[in-house]
Length: 302
Ligand code: 13P
Ligand code: SF4
Image (cartoon, rainbow, N blue to C red; front, side, top):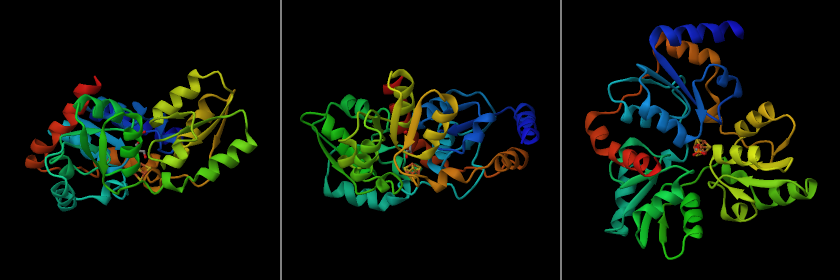
């Protein structure tokens, strides 16, 4: 283990590479990562890096976003099969059809979407800034793709904004049912409940806090409570248990795992750096049309 970590660090130096890792990754990846965090934090890091190579330990849309922000740099995804099931629920034709049913309404896309989808949306958002982004538009009505649940959660937090959502969803977060929260609360009555906004509204309504992966982590660190029921992917709980052994973190149920986030191993990262694989390619036209929607988000979130 130490051997591969040393080799990855050497390759990073040699090739002027940076490793960005999402907090749903296998926790061992943190040993070699330069930045670990949620989608917003990682896209902010991607936007300002001066490394020549970006290795993205995350899913495809995250690496694609990094490439759009860095068209002249090499962006690598260590395992090709790391896609996001939600991002794949809408393509450009489906977006056009959805928009044609609701003409002349600004469209916000969750960053969990393809580069092509971003070319025809006005601004994108992540789970940590969705509310802020929608507010920044100052509109009475917006379209939100692809996540029905994040879109509806944002709508529930705002007065007088109608949000028409596409019917996409995260299969991992939808595994969490309200009864899972209720059972966990029965077992740990003192615990605070924290949920990701990709969960259903029946679940988020039962939470003390709803936020992005790093939002959830920050809450547990800052809150004086000692027990927390976590309704998001297992990677968040693994990191919290490792870093804060004095507190208790309970994954709401055992199988809340995004398999696509878990493909990358340290060996894959090593091979990715050594053989410079698998390179993300986004055509110039798509970058030109799609990057504005990401940049607008970064400007609003700065
Ligand atoms: P974050 O915005 O919290 O990183 O979430 C990304 C994601 O894919 C959650 O499923
Ligand atoms: Fe996509 Fe859900 Fe996995 Fe996040 S947890 S990457 S939304 S499939």
